[in-house]
Length: 258
Image (tube, rainbow, N blue to C red; front, side):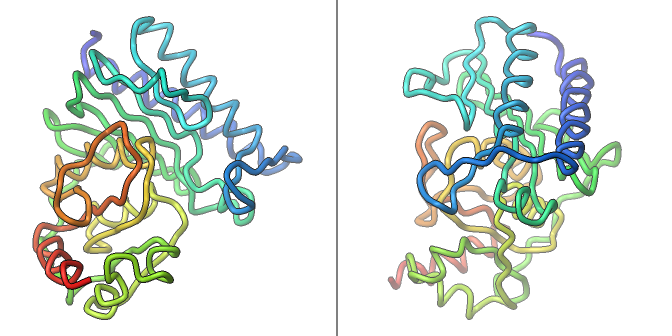
Protein backbone atom coordinates (compact mmCIF):
# COMPACT_ATOMS: atom_id res chain seq x y z
CA UNK A 1 0.00 0.00 0.00
CA UNK A 2 1.19 3.50 -0.82
CA UNK A 3 2.13 5.61 2.20
CA UNK A 4 -0.85 7.31 3.76
CA UNK A 5 0.92 10.67 3.51
CA UNK A 6 1.19 10.22 -0.24
CA UNK A 7 -2.41 9.02 -0.47
CA UNK A 8 -3.66 12.09 1.37
CA UNK A 9 -2.11 14.31 -1.28
CA UNK A 10 -3.47 12.20 -4.13
CA UNK A 11 -6.99 11.78 -2.75
CA UNK A 12 -7.33 15.44 -1.87
CA UNK A 13 -6.38 16.19 -5.48
CA UNK A 14 -9.09 13.82 -6.73
CA UNK A 15 -11.67 15.51 -4.55
CA UNK A 16 -10.71 19.01 -5.63
CA UNK A 17 -11.04 17.93 -9.25
CA UNK A 18 -14.45 16.44 -8.44
CA UNK A 19 -15.48 19.74 -6.84
CA UNK A 20 -14.76 21.59 -10.08
CA UNK A 21 -16.94 19.16 -12.04
CA UNK A 22 -19.76 19.36 -9.50
CA UNK A 23 -19.80 23.16 -9.40
CA UNK A 24 -19.69 23.34 -13.19
CA UNK A 25 -22.84 21.21 -13.26
CA UNK A 26 -24.81 24.05 -11.65
CA UNK A 27 -24.79 25.77 -15.04
CA UNK A 28 -25.98 22.71 -16.97
CA UNK A 29 -29.18 20.71 -17.22
CA UNK A 30 -28.98 17.71 -14.90
CA UNK A 31 -30.31 14.26 -15.69
CA UNK A 32 -32.20 13.23 -12.55
CA UNK A 33 -33.66 9.82 -11.72
CA UNK A 34 -35.39 8.36 -8.68
CA UNK A 35 -34.14 5.22 -6.92
CA UNK A 36 -36.13 3.80 -3.98
CA UNK A 37 -38.71 6.61 -4.06
CA UNK A 38 -39.45 10.12 -5.24
CA UNK A 39 -37.25 11.65 -2.53
CA UNK A 40 -34.28 9.37 -3.26
CA UNK A 41 -32.53 10.98 -6.22
CA UNK A 42 -29.50 10.28 -8.34
CA UNK A 43 -28.08 12.42 -11.12
CA UNK A 44 -25.67 11.96 -14.00
CA UNK A 45 -23.12 13.89 -11.92
CA UNK A 46 -23.37 11.41 -9.01
CA UNK A 47 -22.64 8.60 -11.45
CA UNK A 48 -19.86 10.47 -13.25
CA UNK A 49 -18.03 11.38 -10.04
CA UNK A 50 -18.26 7.84 -8.69
CA UNK A 51 -16.84 6.45 -11.94
CA UNK A 52 -13.92 8.89 -11.75
CA UNK A 53 -13.16 7.99 -8.13
CA UNK A 54 -13.40 4.26 -8.91
CA UNK A 55 -11.11 4.57 -11.95
CA UNK A 56 -8.52 6.47 -9.91
CA UNK A 57 -8.65 3.88 -7.11
CA UNK A 58 -8.29 0.97 -9.56
CA UNK A 59 -5.20 2.56 -11.13
CA UNK A 60 -3.46 2.59 -7.75
CA UNK A 61 -5.03 -0.47 -6.13
CA UNK A 62 -6.35 -2.96 -8.70
CA UNK A 63 -7.24 -5.54 -6.03
CA UNK A 64 -9.03 -3.21 -3.62
CA UNK A 65 -12.69 -3.67 -2.71
CA UNK A 66 -14.85 -0.71 -3.73
CA UNK A 67 -18.26 -0.10 -2.14
CA UNK A 68 -19.87 2.80 -4.00
CA UNK A 69 -23.36 4.18 -3.57
CA UNK A 70 -24.29 4.17 -7.24
CA UNK A 71 -22.60 0.98 -8.37
CA UNK A 72 -22.34 -1.54 -5.55
CA UNK A 73 -23.62 -5.08 -5.70
CA UNK A 74 -23.90 -7.61 -2.89
CA UNK A 75 -20.71 -9.18 -4.22
CA UNK A 76 -18.85 -5.99 -3.33
CA UNK A 77 -19.59 -6.42 0.37
CA UNK A 78 -16.19 -7.59 1.51
CA UNK A 79 -13.85 -6.00 4.06
CA UNK A 80 -10.80 -8.24 3.51
CA UNK A 81 -7.69 -6.25 2.69
CA UNK A 82 -8.22 -2.69 1.47
CA UNK A 83 -11.78 -1.42 1.09
CA UNK A 84 -12.81 1.96 -0.27
CA UNK A 85 -16.22 3.49 0.37
CA UNK A 86 -17.50 6.09 -2.10
CA UNK A 87 -20.40 8.51 -1.74
CA UNK A 88 -19.93 10.84 -4.72
CA UNK A 89 -22.64 13.32 -3.70
CA UNK A 90 -24.17 12.88 -0.27
CA UNK A 91 -27.34 14.94 -0.14
CA UNK A 92 -28.34 14.71 -3.80
CA UNK A 93 -31.72 16.32 -3.12
CA UNK A 94 -29.93 19.37 -1.73
CA UNK A 95 -27.54 19.35 -4.69
CA UNK A 96 -30.48 19.38 -7.12
CA UNK A 97 -32.84 21.72 -5.25
CA UNK A 98 -30.52 24.06 -3.33
CA UNK A 99 -27.03 23.85 -4.85
CA UNK A 100 -25.65 23.66 -1.30
CA UNK A 101 -25.63 21.48 1.86
CA UNK A 102 -24.14 18.38 0.24
CA UNK A 103 -20.82 16.57 0.52
CA UNK A 104 -18.54 14.21 -1.39
CA UNK A 105 -17.07 11.40 0.72
CA UNK A 106 -14.37 8.74 0.54
CA UNK A 107 -13.08 6.34 3.17
CA UNK A 108 -10.33 3.74 3.34
CA UNK A 109 -10.48 0.67 5.58
CA UNK A 110 -7.84 -2.02 6.03
CA UNK A 111 -9.21 -5.40 7.12
CA UNK A 112 -12.20 -3.68 8.65
CA UNK A 113 -10.26 -0.94 10.43
CA UNK A 114 -10.78 2.67 9.34
CA UNK A 115 -7.52 4.35 8.36
CA UNK A 116 -8.72 7.41 6.41
CA UNK A 117 -11.89 9.43 6.06
CA UNK A 118 -12.52 12.36 3.71
CA UNK A 119 -15.67 14.51 3.80
CA UNK A 120 -15.73 17.46 1.41
CA UNK A 121 -18.22 20.26 1.97
CA UNK A 122 -18.12 21.09 -1.71
CA UNK A 123 -19.74 24.52 -1.76
CA UNK A 124 -17.82 25.84 1.25
CA UNK A 125 -14.58 24.31 -0.12
CA UNK A 126 -13.81 22.69 3.23
CA UNK A 127 -12.30 19.21 3.16
CA UNK A 128 -12.31 17.32 6.45
CA UNK A 129 -9.83 14.47 6.36
CA UNK A 130 -7.55 12.33 8.47
CA UNK A 131 -7.26 9.18 10.51
CA UNK A 132 -6.01 7.75 13.79
CA UNK A 133 -2.32 8.14 12.96
CA UNK A 134 -2.41 11.85 12.05
CA UNK A 135 -5.54 13.34 13.58
CA UNK A 136 -8.24 15.25 11.70
CA UNK A 137 -7.78 18.34 9.54
CA UNK A 138 -10.05 20.89 7.95
CA UNK A 139 -8.13 21.71 4.78
CA UNK A 140 -4.65 22.29 6.26
CA UNK A 141 -5.64 23.16 9.83
CA UNK A 142 -5.59 20.45 12.47
CA UNK A 143 -8.82 20.17 14.42
CA UNK A 144 -9.16 19.84 18.18
CA UNK A 145 -11.37 17.25 19.84
CA UNK A 146 -14.84 18.74 20.34
CA UNK A 147 -16.00 19.37 23.91
CA UNK A 148 -17.69 16.39 25.56
CA UNK A 149 -20.99 18.27 25.88
CA UNK A 150 -24.11 16.73 27.41
CA UNK A 151 -27.34 16.46 25.43
CA UNK A 152 -29.21 19.24 27.19
CA UNK A 153 -26.52 21.78 26.35
CA UNK A 154 -26.29 21.07 22.63
CA UNK A 155 -28.16 20.79 19.35
CA UNK A 156 -28.99 17.34 17.97
CA UNK A 157 -29.36 16.34 14.32
CA UNK A 158 -32.11 13.78 13.70
CA UNK A 159 -33.21 12.32 10.38
CA UNK A 160 -36.71 13.55 9.56
CA UNK A 161 -38.43 10.12 9.31
CA UNK A 162 -36.96 9.06 12.65
CA UNK A 163 -38.21 12.20 14.38
CA UNK A 164 -41.64 12.23 12.72
CA UNK A 165 -42.31 8.58 13.54
CA UNK A 166 -40.66 8.80 16.98
CA UNK A 167 -38.25 5.95 16.27
CA UNK A 168 -36.68 4.74 19.53
CA UNK A 169 -38.28 7.61 21.45
CA UNK A 170 -36.25 10.21 19.56
CA UNK A 171 -38.89 12.88 20.12
CA UNK A 172 -37.94 12.76 23.82
CA UNK A 173 -34.28 13.10 22.79
CA UNK A 174 -35.14 16.18 20.74
CA UNK A 175 -37.06 17.72 23.65
CA UNK A 176 -34.19 17.04 26.04
CA UNK A 177 -31.67 18.80 23.79
CA UNK A 178 -31.25 22.50 23.06
CA UNK A 179 -32.96 21.96 19.70
CA UNK A 180 -32.95 19.85 16.54
CA UNK A 181 -31.33 20.43 13.17
CA UNK A 182 -31.95 18.66 9.84
CA UNK A 183 -29.77 19.24 6.78
CA UNK A 184 -30.54 16.27 4.55
CA UNK A 185 -26.92 15.14 4.24
CA UNK A 186 -25.15 12.73 6.57
CA UNK A 187 -21.80 14.23 5.61
CA UNK A 188 -22.85 17.77 6.50
CA UNK A 189 -24.49 16.60 9.73
CA UNK A 190 -21.36 14.68 10.76
CA UNK A 191 -19.23 17.76 10.02
CA UNK A 192 -21.36 19.72 12.49
CA UNK A 193 -20.72 17.09 15.16
CA UNK A 194 -16.96 16.93 14.67
CA UNK A 195 -16.83 20.74 14.67
CA UNK A 196 -18.74 20.82 17.96
CA UNK A 197 -21.74 22.65 16.48
CA UNK A 198 -24.02 19.73 17.37
CA UNK A 199 -23.63 17.16 20.15
CA UNK A 200 -24.93 14.37 17.95
CA UNK A 201 -26.63 13.14 14.83
CA UNK A 202 -28.81 10.07 14.37
CA UNK A 203 -30.40 8.63 11.25
CA UNK A 204 -30.76 5.50 9.16
CA UNK A 205 -27.56 5.32 7.14
CA UNK A 206 -25.95 3.08 4.56
CA UNK A 207 -22.27 2.12 4.82
CA UNK A 208 -21.09 4.80 2.37
CA UNK A 209 -23.05 7.40 4.37
CA UNK A 210 -21.10 6.83 7.57
CA UNK A 211 -17.77 5.16 6.62
CA UNK A 212 -15.76 8.39 6.30
CA UNK A 213 -17.51 10.03 9.22
CA UNK A 214 -16.76 7.10 11.49
CA UNK A 215 -13.02 7.42 10.91
CA UNK A 216 -13.04 11.15 11.61
CA UNK A 217 -15.44 11.01 14.56
CA UNK A 218 -13.65 8.22 16.40
CA UNK A 219 -10.27 9.86 15.78
CA UNK A 220 -11.65 12.95 17.54
CA UNK A 221 -12.86 10.97 20.54
CA UNK A 222 -16.54 10.85 19.56
CA UNK A 223 -18.80 7.83 19.77
CA UNK A 224 -20.31 6.27 16.63
CA UNK A 225 -22.56 3.28 17.29
CA UNK A 226 -26.10 2.12 16.82
CA UNK A 227 -28.66 3.88 19.01
CA UNK A 228 -28.71 0.97 21.46
CA UNK A 229 -24.94 1.25 21.92
CA UNK A 230 -24.03 -1.86 19.93
CA UNK A 231 -21.20 -1.72 17.37
CA UNK A 232 -21.83 -0.86 13.74
CA UNK A 233 -21.45 -3.41 10.98
CA UNK A 234 -19.62 -1.67 8.14
CA UNK A 235 -21.43 -3.79 5.55
CA UNK A 236 -24.98 -3.28 6.86
CA UNK A 237 -27.35 -0.31 6.69
CA UNK A 238 -28.76 0.57 10.11
CA UNK A 239 -29.55 3.31 12.57
CA UNK A 240 -26.36 5.23 13.35
CA UNK A 241 -25.66 7.64 16.20
CA UNK A 242 -22.56 9.82 16.21
CA UNK A 243 -22.29 11.91 19.36
CA UNK A 244 -20.13 13.13 22.18
CA UNK A 245 -19.68 10.38 24.74
CA UNK A 246 -21.74 12.29 27.30
CA UNK A 247 -24.57 12.91 24.83
CA UNK A 248 -24.47 9.25 23.80
CA UNK A 249 -25.04 8.24 27.42
CA UNK A 250 -27.92 10.70 27.77
CA UNK A 251 -29.53 9.47 24.55
CA UNK A 252 -29.13 5.82 25.59
CA UNK A 253 -31.11 6.49 28.78
CA UNK A 254 -33.97 8.11 26.86
CA UNK A 255 -34.16 5.62 24.03
CA UNK A 256 -34.19 2.64 26.42
CA UNK A 257 -37.53 3.93 27.67
CA UNK A 258 -39.13 3.42 24.23
